[in-house]
Amino acid sequence: MGFFKKIKKVMAGKANQVADKLEENNIEAVVRQTIKEMEDEYRQVKQAVNQSITLKKKVEKKYNNAKSEVKHWEERAKTAVDNDKDGLAKEALEKKQDQLRLAQKYQKQLEERKAAVESHKAKMKELKEKLDQAKDKQEELIAEAKTAQATKEINNSLSGIDETNAFSELEELEDKVDGLQAEAEASDEIYAEETEADLESKFEKLEADSDNQSIEDELAQLKKDMNN
Image 1 (tube, helix red, strand yellow):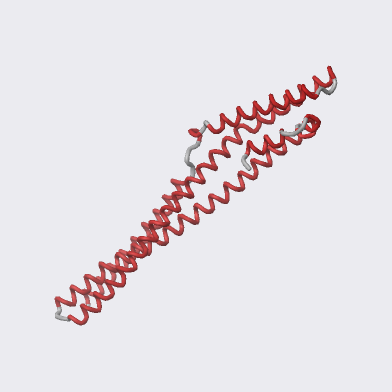
Image 2 (spheres, rainbow, N blue to C red):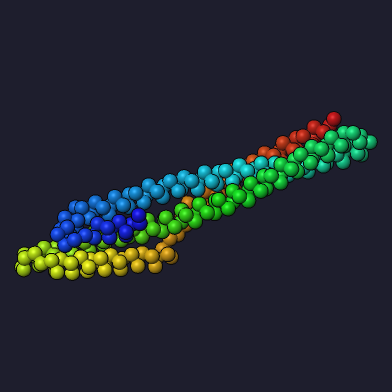
């Protein structure tokens, strides 16, 4: 159930239930508890995004390694041919084909992981927007409810319990909450991306470090091969 739907549910009911449902402590507790639940959900989605990015990076690393192996075994085959070692060249080409199949498999997985990451990021952004909107509006909503409750109590003191007046107060409060909901839904531009860029850069650095290590390994292997 959405934030504003929960608030409206608290406000709904018959006239003789309005006083109980709109007590100051009750409405404030409902608002703050709803925001806490939204914060918990947002943290869970952020964890899912982190995991999704990690899985994407792992597949990406496997894909790049497989491509590197394809090139490596192709060079090995050329070296064997240059030395009239056709049998050895065939073995190298078989290794190349194995790595090529792996690269194609990892490429497909990588595309799927990228799509999952984008989907999770979009969900996280949507939840962050709603959470920010709820936090911005919580004090205003609580104040609105308290004002409406105070007005109702004054009217009751002056004229006694009036069912028609109670319904009128309830409708007025619902209209105000509906207005807040419309404002919240129209405030899509308030969100600014926070940690995604930093997170991406950390993984990009991790990938770059891995690539550099792969180059060092390949260079060492090449020197070893040249010296043999």
